[in-house]
Length: 402
Image (cartoon, rainbow, N blue to C red; front, side, top):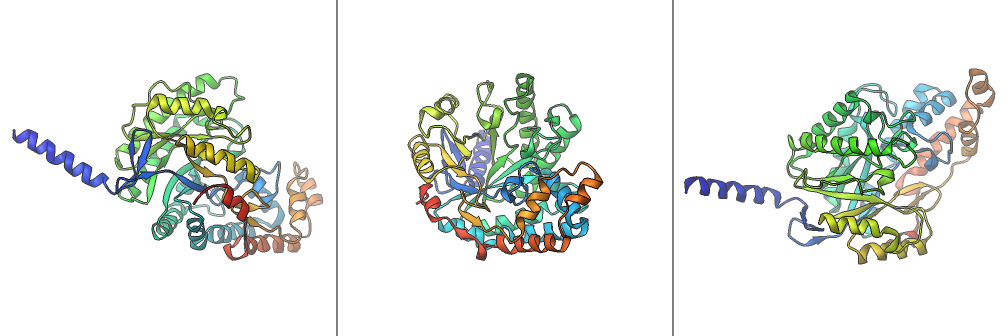
């Protein structure tokens, strides 16, 4: 009898502890007060994981490509200062409050694993600032009343082998135990730091693993499942409160290789879709997998389309109980909540970024006037500030956030 009472007390304590966090109820999510949570939000893409197309670049499309190009353009010290100013100004409290005003209830924060190492990244060569950056977003989200999903967009070794994970042309994560151990170490550290933080909805272990074009993708998918399982175990050593979010393969579109969705008792799935017909048929396999598992599914990335397409697709999500977070919040040009105006002479930087820089001679010949280039980079910092960005009202309305 005494043992039964102690077990009941333990279960009650666990239930009380989890009452302040988002929880899973079948295919639904629940707020701490028990009400249903239907995810609607945006991604803070490009801030802590720069992508070339958001700057207007094409071939110079990953973080280390962009950094190298800037160093060739204006030197490493000026580049380091640019990245500091970029991180300080691209996303601020004002941006988070604006996101809340649109009707969003959740933000997805993509980040690079290097933010939690002493590898060179975004102007720092030691004492990376990943925790301090996330701490600020947590603080702002708490004030705004938003949930936060932490998304490791760029995993050690690379999980895609393409520009989106800032890798070296192959998903080396699946070949390297060293990279896998680093993945687990970083997530264990993040989980330990934020285990008691109710603003955080959950941890997305990695973004869009294993593209469709790898010939050995089926073997890689088997390894992916094992990495998910091992990483979940490592997270649970530090944190049993937060949801673990699991993405499919082939740009988060493929889920048929999952045969076990019980390896963690507090997990859900995340999918991505761009383009195509905005109908339930277009995502019927995702809906079927969600129903088979009996676990929540949310669309972690979609967008880059017309307002009409987005409005139609969000209705499909709502009708089929799939929360959604559009990509991205801001960039140069449109198809975002916030548009950044192109600075004067920015085309000179684009031309340099796309030029043949395969030799020092080519770099010298392609490089524009350095003072002009540096001014354009500083002007970009001004342009990306919240006060200087332009809200895209019709885009926002198409997302059915209110």
